[in-house]
Length: 102
Image 1 (spheres, rainbow, N blue to C red):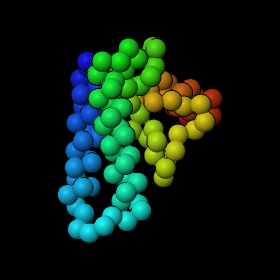
Image 2: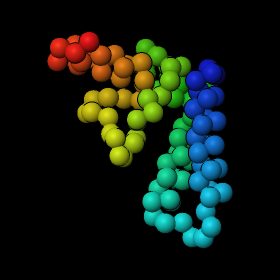
Image 3: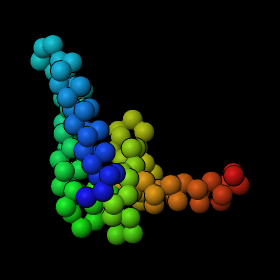
Image 4: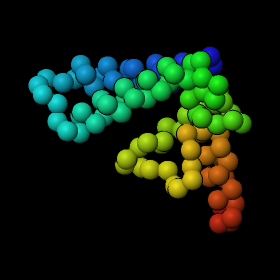
């Protein structure tokens, strides 16, 4: 178990709790989607506490951080990007250097 896994679990549970306690009546479709997504993140993070490849699913960084944009419908990751924040950051930096940014 790594601190990143535990932090991801706490974050997902807090988000799910905030959404659930903010409901006054039957949830809208969007609220249901957000709650379901937060609960899935929590379940995934809980499973990663003992998983071989951790929450990232990355063989290189099994206990690394999960990219916060992973699974975000409003700001999706480019094709080929995974859950691992470290690998995705490396891809972003390489793409920026190819475009001439620093």
